[in-house]
Image 1: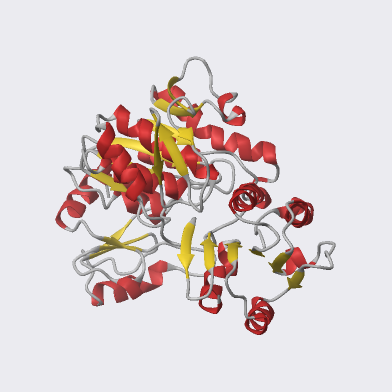
Image 2: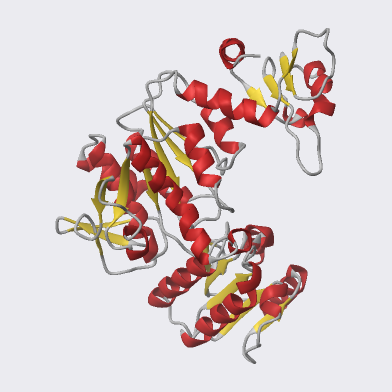
Length: 422
């Protein structure tokens, strides 16, 4: 079926689903396939459960007009999303990078939505499936879409740019993320550069952090750029949370970590670019409350926690430790770290480096959770556990009280489950 005809069906049934366990009534079911599942086998179930159409790439029932056979379901989903994007007078801002994508997206959304009808990537729908699903959620009267673009291998960002066709783009930073997939740091850098290459070709505009030499050296002279850095917003003296200064006035945020200053500057320059007045921008930034285990300050009955457990890689853990050391007496604070996953051959080296850094910063109370940290050379004063359940028992018996605690680890560790113990 031609994409125009499929789009006319989508306009009548603009809800899209890919999981028969989460069927949306009167929606279009796209029968995606993966290593361990084949959505084609659930097409009829989707229709029986309330979907109006099922898009398949294996013959199911040629006599059923509500089952539409296409050469490739995933490619069709991506093409439909791209077609929809081009039917709307929409400005797309693409956000990629190793760390801070979601915080940048959320801050920028808070700034821009006060002035323009703005859409943001829901949750972490930032891959080759999530991004087209996000695009297909955008209503026709939307002005701006802020879309996350995740990557784990070369070519990911290039594909996502082809689908979303961003007018603006940015790289939050380039760290040691998904090295197992990229194969090397050089490949990781080239993967992030794909957004720059796309914007050069399309005549788009790049938000450039003047204080990030790794990113700035990737930017060619013929790329349209909007610059941000300390000349825009200064970092103020740290407290428990991040403070910043604009034109001599200091503002307090609800974000932990000096590294978030770059995300704040991005949100600010985006607001200026799209005509948001300064007082509205600053109000949005200082009132933004982090969620989803990202840079959250959590006060329990016993302790004060910095909960930054949504994900972790060497770069993000290093800056989190540096920020935590600045605001806490290291000898009285606790550091609880979970494994950093998907690092490939550099995993042991990077986990050892983090353990060394914890010691160098003077932290005396540290808990390391996971097989990767367990394989490092142990410091006698620190505590190491292969399984999280072992750490749970230790924490219960330790009865930590009146402490400042940093919790950070990869998503697979789910360190947020320790909050109730602390």
